[in-house]
Length: 228
Image 1: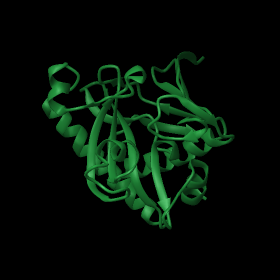
Image 2 (image 1 turned 180 degrees about the horizontal axis):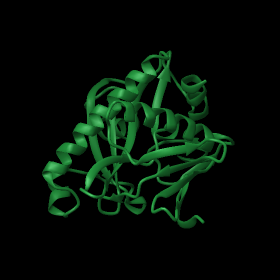
Image 3 (image 1 turned 120 degrees about the vertical axis):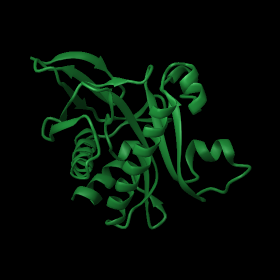
Image 4 (image 1 turned 90 degrees about the vertical axis):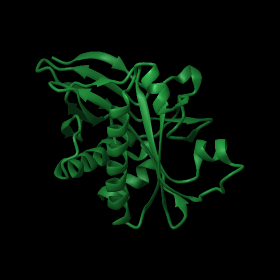
């Protein structure tokens, strides 16, 4: 019998009797004023079918990563019921989001627009933000993460290495469909017995900005292009 332990913006989490967890994907996506934004802190709109679509893409990407030896919390997925079974993992502090950027768009452009043009190429730039809706997910440095007891310098180095490796694999997978990845948001956690750092959460259209022929691809369309 699964027990609800957390209701999230885009997923609900259930504890299973075998000690693992079940993620139930919803049709809600983050955004503002009815416009999708993977970096937004609130649910902006509901798109019918986006839950299953997100899981379908997540399943495909997690299985590609598994084949390449990348550690994740993924066990298996049930597309019909929009659920994914995962290993239990603890997050860093109250949770971190790690973004890998290949183009200057979104919040990066808003912050650094005096120094960069929209869409300018970036060299797999990694930034870490705290999951804190009230403070708009502030960007945090490696030094601050260590001082606050959230992440050691060695753990940060591992996090960055994994982020660049995973993002590069996703980017290559999308390129097979002539799709360009502009940025992607990942989450990590620790799993027992050795506190190994692994990729957690999902890898779907709601977590990335992807473009084809210079045009942004909506999450549902991205799923159809990649898995169809």
